[in-house]
Length: 160
Picture: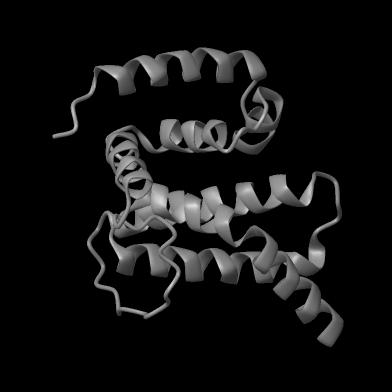
């Protein structure tokens, strides 16, 4: 068990930014992001012993993270109250110009439908269209079409 815990801890350290990015895509509220982050970690832990390397670890983490956040967003649409959890991991601070630009981009992206948010997040992480297709479960051609439409939609949005 100790070896499994060490492997899991190492995986989380290496992929913390990916997990956080997914969570941040679903909310810019630090409390909600913390809750999402915790839920993703729980689901990763539950599935970790059964991970069979049929896909890359990165793909598996993305899929678990996205599925967890999508499920929680659906569940929370009923406005279930949450309890704050203090974890200092805000990677996208508005203290500098880059942070403000990331925040503006995420504000626009948060106006998209959930599935489109997942696709653009993966694209922003420089994943190939094939990798995106494998993670979200659609064809590579569908990814190409959706990304074109999503980019056009983002261009036409205002920051308000």
